[in-house]
Length: 224
Ligand SMILES: C[S@@+](CC[C@H](N)C(=O)[O-])C[C@H]1O[C@@H](n2cnc3c(N)ncnc32)[C@H](O)[C@@H]1O
Image (cartoon, rainbow, N blue to C red; front, side):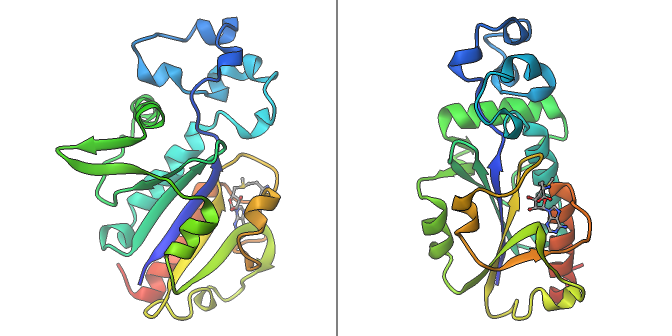
């Protein structure tokens, strides 16, 4: 069966209209350059101070590291992983396991801008990234026969990691990971499951949490 990772509330969005005229935005904005259209706190911090919820926005770097870790894993290469990205604007995208994501951050930002504008990334008639027109509860229900975990430093710590995935051959596992820099999950995300698990006594970066969760799954499934 499959391990399904959903990175939720990722700070991935096109620069919003209300701050487009701010000097901190215009100095980096090149109309024909896709990557410069993406909100990025490293470049737009000053302009972002006026945006609601600004602390959880403009973090394509988190999504980039998480995607590279997930799609580069043996679990993904062996066909045991599905990866979904959910954004702060409540859009959901599924990544084809075979997509080659650029290691170069600017190229990644360009791809994400194109994705947010066009909705899908297709190459040679194969869908590489596809927008899912469902909400999170419906998406999770569509997997059928699944156990759903919310991965959080505030969950019950799992000491024996072999107990995390007890029936990987007969059911799917959905693991929800926060794609934001700090703070807890919203109520909407907390309502998705009551199984909240912690894998460390420390608050980890999302890509470390993803990488470890996938590794625990690979060990149980003997994927190497
Ligand atoms: C930087 S954290 C988000 C901020 C928040 N301080 C936290 O720890 O939940 C990014 C994500 O990594 C995952 N994560 C972080 N520490 C974890 C832990 N100890 N156990 C399980 N998941 C963890 C959670 O999904 C979290 O939303």
